[in-house]
Length: 318
Image (cartoon, rainbow, N blue to C red; front, side, top):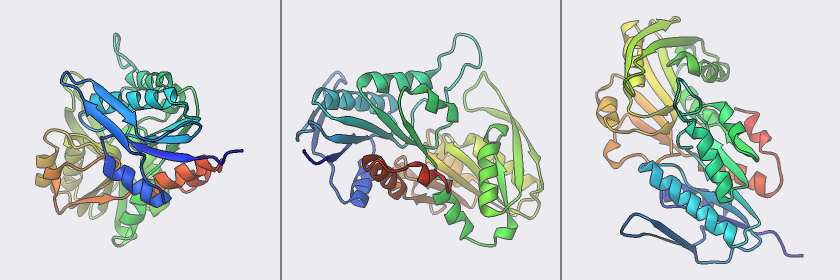
């Protein structure tokens, strides 16, 4: 009987993270030829046999997001047609996750569409980190390993200073459950920033109210992602207005689109902490931005999946 073979692949969206995962696993990425035709079509060919192998394909959905997604789908299809035994798709940042339900009529549920596309292309399993909404796990017809970056982020924050002065802050009501987990981990109280959003304007928040005691406290604003930075910076301003001594922002995914760089630079927030599920833009090399490695967590999950171990063990300390 042939020994099982684990192969690790990467798209072009975030190769540095894939290389870091390969290093953690003591392996190397399978050489892959990927080119763009003049009209934007993507061509992929693997330069090694994948027949009968357990294949792990990494691609974070970075900007330009639709190109990253399409490249991943093409790569999955290539693996399937080359007789891969199993295809695990590693998506550190899952695109379209914010479109997980219909808020009004005639809207798509694009997070479900993403799951359908991955399954149709040939994915057997999804491994992802900090989905915007937990119910997205149920959109995929197959196993989903939903990892959490909180231990990585919270360990860093907890080691920075006096935990007795920390207050964990949810930037909106929808993140309270996430923030509550931070409170348990850091032994800190909870505060909430209640925001009123203008649904006719994307990324536009009109008002904030702070619920909880933040005066004289070091506030840790926690979220799953920071996109343009408008919501989180406005929430930080509301905390400072209520007498917060300092504000730290911790988020798994640094999407950092459009005006994010200027907003982070001009914010009174002392430090923005992200993991490297997404590449940090080159023009955002600010002293106040800290990027923590997520490769050890991904590599541990890959090892458990390949060895038929327990990914749940990695979730018990979330």
